[in-house]
Structure formats: structure tokens, C-alpha cells
Length: 454
Image (cartoon, rainbow, N blue to C red; front, top):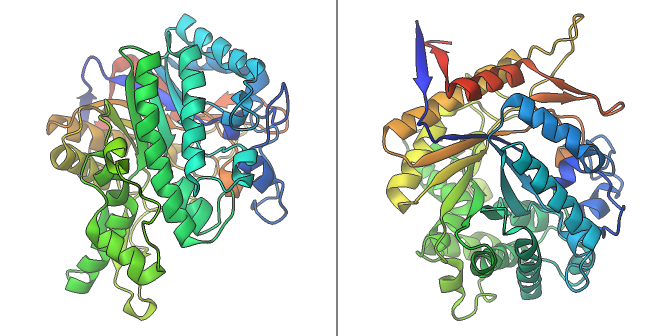
């Protein structure tokens, strides 16, 4: 049985990318070095030994890519600004050629009736700031506010949707705690300090953006996972509570005026010996600056099992589930659960799904088609979950598929493909996948026919 799923009339359909993953031109036109430039050039850090030096060459092919977006019927495009392209040293002298690039990009989007959603920070900290200590230092937060001021002053007359940070959990804990992302440091105390300064810079920058861009909508994007216990045992429930605190509440609670959750503060101290001495008077009020929307990046859920011998909770895989090529469980109902929780626990004005997608192996058939049926099914199931949340009163205003095109997938290099557009990284040819054609139809119809049981 086919059921037509229709979204609200003002629902916004988009796609998302980030600067380092697609732009290339890593050292052109005055751009400074970023921590990802340094990290990817360090042997052994990237799975396939690649770098983002060229990536999708979007810096030179942006007009072609905007035409592609128009062909898809995109109503909005979420992209990030490269901080070192604007301020090569992280602060001080502005690189006008960098600002000019984003000027042209924004104008090109508006000419095609595509709404720009700008993310100021998607992990490419200027290396010069990292040399001074990076996000664990309060000075990085202060530099970010200067950067936000420069960009919003230039683009704020046209850009009316701003995201301060993308996934500060990843920037802090994968970059400074686990070391699998740039800058590759393994120090949990530094990670906690970085997380705090990321949130502090968000609060400061929110007010600066509003000053430069009157009537703008300002928010932040978090990666949030529904955390469920592996069994009904009290120990597994406690493990789920700890993981949820670490990955979700540590950012949600202070953003929405509740401060850092005391149970997570105690867990950081007990398990990692980490403290909050970096917090200064007034910081919590700054971090709780009112926002207009929350960006929710959703890919999977976490199943938690107690791991008392290791003195820390851990997540497990469920053997009867489907997994993406990233090893992430396909769990669309958990997206529904998270959206319901965000709405009823935090009373958020507006929510956007700012990333949702899946990496699966792609192959080009003899007729030149790319039939990525598993990705299409993933997107359909998650849009069904999003629609169900709207029906329950969640103020979900839009959806951005991750990603517009295949790109440099961080520490995985070019080994994982998320795009609804296939990119041949040798020739830079773009080719619409089956999922892309399906998404184009979804946008045109503001919905889709959902096959029950599919």
C-alpha cells in the first residue's frame, strides 16, 4: 500500500556541505593553513593517505555546482565558511579575496532562488590559532567572535540564516580528546576546555551576528544520538544515562539555560580526572544566549551496555540491524524519538534537520546509472520519521540531506561516499544518483509516496 506523505507548505528542502570537504584550493588566493590542512598532510592520519587539497574543486566549480543545485530544485543550501580563507592568521588582517568568493557564492544562490544557510565553523580552525593552543584556550573563542563579526558584516545584508558551530562535540572530543580528528590531540581535560570555549564563542557570536544582520535567524548545530539501554537492567540504564549526558546533555543543557549537568561533571571528574576550572563568572549566561533554531544532525542511535570492568559505559552493535558503510546502525525511529525529546524537553522555537544521510558503496552500472537503492531507502525512512514528528507537534522547519555530493570524508579520506551526487575525483565529473533523482521529486511534490513495509 502506497501512502502519500506531504510536508507543511513552508517546509524547506535543502542539502548540506562543508568548506574543507568540498572546496579544495587549500592554499590559493591568500588562504591560510587550517588544522585539517596540517592533519591531512601528516602521514598516517587519513585512511587512504589523501588530503582535502583539491576535494571536489568547488572553489573553482562553484557556478557549476549552483546550477546542479538549481536542477535538483533545492530551496536552501547549507555551507560553511573557511575561517582561514577569511582570516589567514585567525584574527587581524582580512583576506578580501576570501570574502569575495563567498560574496559571489551567496549572490549566485539568491539569483537561483536558493536560501543560503551559513555555518561559520565546521572544524577548520586556522593553524596559527592552534599553534597558540587552539580551542582549549579562551583566546580562540575571542578570535572566533572577531571572525563572526567580519563575515556577518559582509554577508549579513543577504544571509538571514546563521549557524555558529557544527557539532562542537566532534570538534572538542574527537579533535582534542580522542585525537582521530584534527588537531589530533589526546587529552580529555583539553577536550573539556575546548567544548566550553566552543559554547562560549557561540554565545558571544550570536549577539554579534544579530547586530550585523538584523532580523537574522541564528542557531547552532549539534550531533545528537538517541541513547537506549541494551537491556532492562539498572546498570545498562545507568550506562545509557552517562552516554546521553556526555554526547547530548553536555551541550543541550547549557545552550538552553540549564548549565552543565551535574552528573556529567561528576563523571568527567571520576572517570577522566577532568574539571571545569576554565569556566569563568558569567560564562553560563553567555552560552545560554537565546537562539532562533537548533540544527539537528542525525545519523544513527547508540545502544549502551554497562562496562563496569573498564569503569566507563560503552556502546554496542545490535546484530539484527542494518548498518551503513560507516558501521552506523540504520535507526530512523530514533530520529523521531530525538525530535520529540528536543521539542518537549527544551521547548525549542524551530528545529532543522541540518544533516541526515548515509554512506553506502556506490557503483556505476553499464548504462551509466548509479542505483543507490539503500541510500534512497535510508532517506525515505528518515523522512517518514521526521514527518511523524511534525504530526506530533514538533516545530521542524526543514531538512538538509547530507551530502549534496561525495566529498573528503575527514579521517576516512575518499573511501566513504555520502552524496546524492556522485563525484569522480579524478575528472571532477558530477553525476546525479538515483537517490538524487528521488530527492528532486520529493522537493517538487513536497512529499513522497511511502511504501508501508519497505
